[in-house]
Length: 224
Image (cartoon, rainbow, N blue to C red; front, side, top):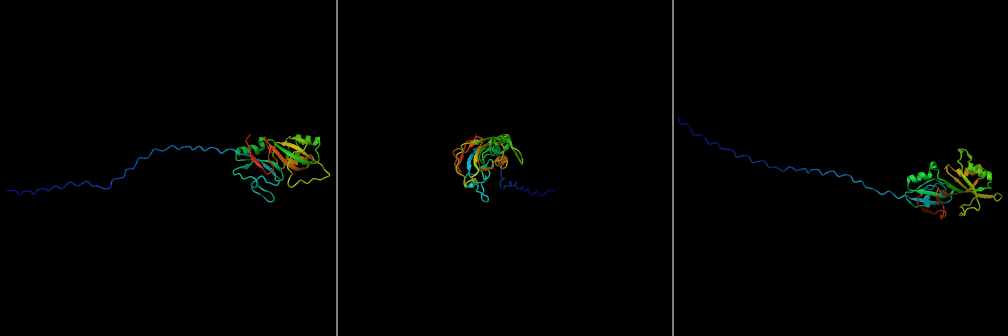
């Protein structure tokens, strides 16, 4: 028996490969950069000598009847190193350096401070000896001081306002050198030996002096 012929098998065409959007290739990360340390030059140390007039506070802001330093010093970034009472005159130091400020102002460093003091009456040798040895104040005895009469009196500009003098009582000038920083210490010391202070001028702090400075003037000096 004859078999019917087989139908030819049709082969399916091979599927074309699928094409699509190419996948983005991530770039390899760049090697990390080492941080660069930027060296900033330190700010230059400034030290200012100011001849503080009577009636000016040891701060930039005025207060009540007293003027502030901003009326005389237009210099940003400097701060007072060691206060001086509003009713006292003379050398006030200012700096932009914290370490220098502490070295000048902190009594632990015992930087010598020289004062010219006009007192009522003429101190005798016993009073000067007491100041040299140290006097008893209400907050304890003072350290020994250097004390001497100034004759002739120091050449200073007249104070504004002038001191109140009694015509029947003479006045004298003392030079006191102390290494402490108590509140109104010099005034209390002269009063303790019987000679009230009429005028008080700080002439020097360590190696820094009033030389060449009129009241209200300031200058920048080298740190010593």
